[in-house]
Image 1 (cartoon, each protein chain N blue to C red):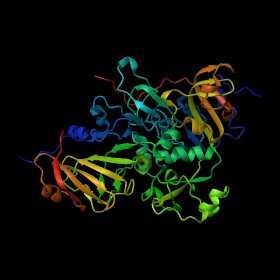
Image 2: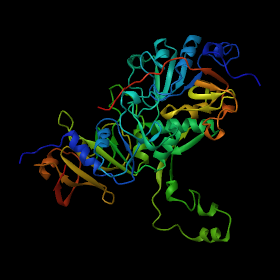
Image 3: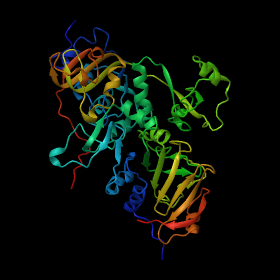
Image 4: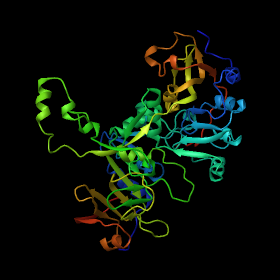
Length: 223
Length: 272
């Protein structure tokens, strides 16, 4: 079987399987936002928006559009029953105080010991880090979804991030188009646990710069 | 007590230059997240006042023709303290030409610096930004995560005084399983000369109620400036607000004006 990388949608489906009933979750802008479309039926997950909402609902219909109700990506949204609004200070107290169970974010680089860089490229216009540094420093489980390699083929899982960091030793799981890796806290290395259909451990090695461990039984990503 | 309510923003700004509230080089906090909950009516009045060389503390910088983009057009801002300045071509041009300075703060650090400033807290430690460019030049100290030290609260056991049980604890070594300390960086509180905020409803004392995610940075900013002006969509008499529902006590607010500009949506997204 030829190597069949996961599509962006499949990456988010895999990420959604990390959700648990009752979790408070913050989804980053871009691909991670799509995880909301794949929350397993019957599971009650509370999505937090760092501009001050716990309990994001579906996008509004035309009649429901409200300029006072947006997500962190500035899109119009709705609030689900049971939602609450609060200030940015309260929102980041929730994030920095460890009251959010999981966040799912994109990344430009992740290092072999779990550093993450996802906010600036030196020499390019810097737009700012927004809430990313607070999320990676404060949330219990940081899941990164990203392409395994950049567009020019460069590995994104590296020994040491060459880009300025967003946070140190904070990534607990990596879901790419080629594989799933879980951080082994004791050994401070990611462990390869699942492969994309058709991918081999050697495929991952040849596309990865950072060291990683391989689980005894590597499965295929079920999506 | 002089009346706090003014018929419009220009009226509320009319004497502010003479009284020294408005001056070149001042620091202004401006509420809002994206275009949501921004005090657009007051931004226009600030622009029309002509004050220059402003340091603006605001999470974002608006878009080219709305929000703080209006003050960038007229080159009245010399420095921004923000967390994200994405969607703004004028901003990028002035930044790259060196006209405009920017200090990026993580969004939670920015929110907490403003909250601390208003609460009289000059500085605080946070884990956010450790190991990143944000930490450069700042004091770093190690602490236990507060939730991992519910016994000594980051003080030495010797410093804990009180009951006999506590005294016995002083000689007991900390449990071997105690989690490791982590690094934290010292961040300072922020206080401004003027804050401009947007609320949904005010009474004539200045008690404010915000609406939905338009609350964002407005409550902290209302508490962290020497002079605070609120624009509101609805004004009610004193006594009409349920005290249990007030978000910002009126004592923080110096002036209240009606919001006159239609709210704008940055990314209209609807369900298919």
